[in-house]
Length: 521
Image (cartoon, rainbow, N blue to C red; front, top):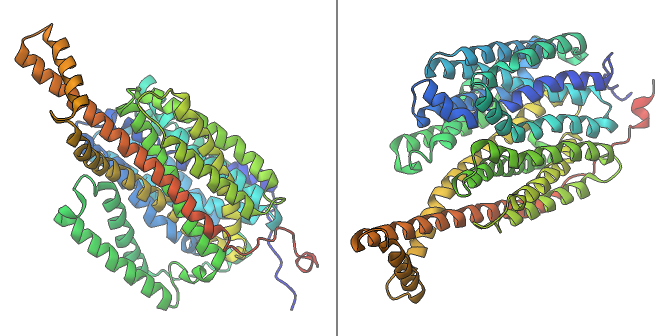
């Protein structure tokens, strides 16, 4: 039997990559660009900061629900039609976000934006993987990584600059020209492979979709809002967790037993794909976790303005951009296993370097580990994507890219939830330990407290000076407790990178060279 021929597009793969990457960069940027503008949004729309966080949560929930359904949508309606429809929905909803006159209207517009963006990125990734020959998929993923990795890093900086210079509404309006141009490029360049056209009669799995929506919606809300509600101390958290677990088990059981599943979970039998999703979840947690934690550290402890803290992260994005271009050139020449080892080693080193921070550090002591972190992510993302997809045929790529991007987003949600929870709980535990040294029997504390009280007594009465001295000591105690919580988190991110490394050696070898038989006519 003659081997199946791979399909190739009519246009240049590099031109197709440019077209789909416009849409990808636009969508991924919106996952983080609104974060820094939340206080401005809350004030403008007469909402509390806690209520304004639904602007982020609503987008992530809608995004997560659509991601795994990408393969079915492409098979049922045609990949090009879905891709162009997503661009239109995302662009129009961006305009609605900018025009929003109240928080509920903004949240509704963000839900539409998340629905449009959810399928856009995995379809763009599938288009790029199919457009390039198998031996050049590493180069294709290098281009894809420049959008997926760099965009969320640059998002807070760009969002801060736009909000300070113009208005928070312009962080949505900037999508309009990009979206229009991306639609024109997609209409011109993108085409459906023959096997997509043959599967337009696929039936929808209503039960699977319902279980998937319940599972992902409850999980995403739990991760975003759990810390605010003290996790399992709140009854709604306990109920939501139970519903999420039951829906997840039901979804997995149904998808394995139904004849026409919404998401083909049998793809997890592929070892490279299953390992790749585990490592991508880990990478997403570290990437989004550090992206959330570094600005918090700079603003809350070091006193940096929001925009300046964003500038401190900018070199990380620049380093990731150039490193990705280099990795794209060598990914087919150097074994992916060694590139992944280099990447995870650098990721661990950068996290351990950040765990050495203190209240006397200069900005360069934060920027340099961040640059190393950006290089590390580039060394991981490109070969990891190539290895994950290496054993799959073209027909499986639509389903695979949806699941792959879902795990990246869920990993990011876990990372951010971990940061917010660990900072709050870690600061409390460290404060409880440190306060044991603030007693009259501790000679060092007694001497410093007496000196502070005597200095303050020169400007006020003795009673007021005593209260002020205690307040100053408590402020210092609270600052040091939070610093130790940040240090612990950075160290744990480094430990996560180290623990992930053994999985690299379980990958089957990736063969980038084309098979002679497949090239025969």
